[in-house]
Image (tube, rainbow, N blue to C red):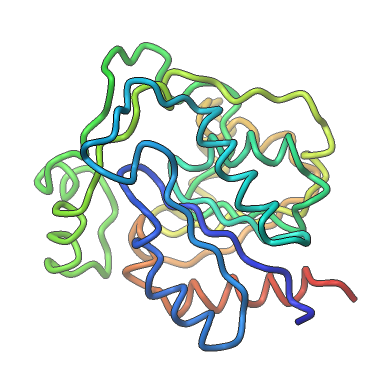
Length: 236
């Protein structure tokens, strides 16, 4: 198949299951897809106190290597931190990076965080603080039921960045919960969680108005966008 394989990495509190509808759509179309559960997010019984950002970056690199040829790496939300670290390690194995309602950070997401893990907020807090357009109560209930606390080390650690080849990778931000213009305004204000965008040399933007979790609120549209990127990123 000429298309690049797609590696899907979900954000905080989520496992590979979060991508199920997107994966089913892509595989029905004949696309090769790997959905990843990051270390510390496989079970509530896991010891999250020992999990680091580097552990999660290692897992992403492992999934990329498994594909056997350059991939489209799609990272959602908080997975941008280990995902950006992975682009630094193996840029030669990445055909395109997709930031799904997120952006690459230059530093730790929360360097002052002291706990062993960060539980998912209550649904009440999510409804107050996050864009939830298009999400059903059933989807939110499943999110709350299946959510796994995020390892604290992932919040405290900064990605290790030494290879500037990552800056030339074709990259796309799919803006969903906030518009691309809002992202650009936040970047201009110096918000550190998306500071890496300022250094990317091959960056495009795509707006897909919906919730912060488009794999649930617009799975077909997200799958289509990823499919188009995979087709354009495959070997000519």
